[in-house]
Length: 478
Image (cartoon, rainbow, N blue to C red; front, top):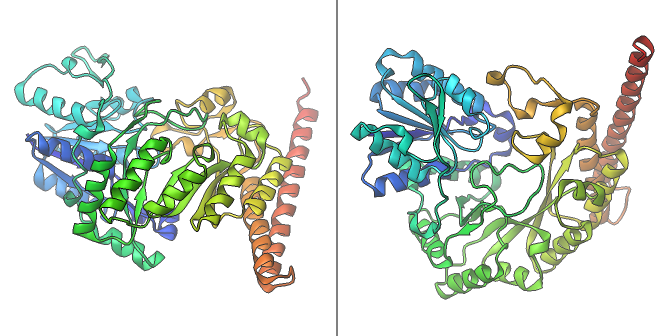
């Protein structure tokens, strides 16, 4: 029984990503492909990133696979539902088993089953997919497969017991990268950024409890592959693809200090010092860790900040201080490592004063790069639970995502568009003035003008919202 794996992400449909051009191959399904191959299950991966819906549909129609597994996240949900509709509408694919998995399915089991999925995989997919294929091949009932949901004979949803997480990640094979064509990724990176990158994962799960973060697949676990096997994988990547850099996708790369020590020793002994970037937390960095990152090849570290307001960080349950973040950004720069940080605006309780604190934080920390998102509650997170009663219906589930959720009492999308512009331009003004040694530089003046416009837009939007609220109270007094 052959398995056909895909993920439903089409770069051509993602306007923002086409500007950023930092695409990565789908590691999750490449892990499943490797695991199935190792256990003798024929598998094909159709990477949709640089392809099209019409080509995917053509391939499905031509091959008529017995099992189609689709990785689904928040960003791809709507597109994945379209793939399911296609599979269910084609007579020649009527017998195809349709399986969905990934972070988006855990809290929407019923809806995915209603949409046409035969099985929803909850949690890790490697062992589950192998057992599903075995059950279908041998004609056994599915209720013996842990970690899934499906419709029973009477139409009721059956949920089997939760699957135990894989205890040792060293037991997993490395992702089957040769199942996809990596050349388009490498070429896109080099064309837009001057050098390319290949993604690699060393761990699963995160034990921290940030309220906005989804842990739908791995929960609060922390498991990691041995430094030796990670170095083996890096060696294989270098031998086959010779990339300019690596991107470690782990949530907190320096969470385990002993692991970092061993990893640095491993790559140094092998003379395998490949430039890489990673993500971590300020409270899991210190001088020793920064030194080891530098020694092992790290050229850029992303340190989560989210806000320059301690009040907001505490509301998020970030468990770090603004000062810690700032100090670790500066320490990393001191050791010659580029720095990046993440900013989130619009978290409940945030005021304009908190946004101004974030601007001041970025000026003082002076990261080389920073990204800004406007917060939205993801189903299943504590943040979502906190604001559940304030959610305005985002529209039909099949055509909307959690990104479309709006909250009562929250500032408008225009306000946050201005807020993002203000943060970016005030910080860029500060950096341009510092580089030029004067606030009168052309670049600084340009950013200052944009920041002033953005600040005026924020104030105007606030005034308009206050006027609307006053009008409603007058017209509909309680």
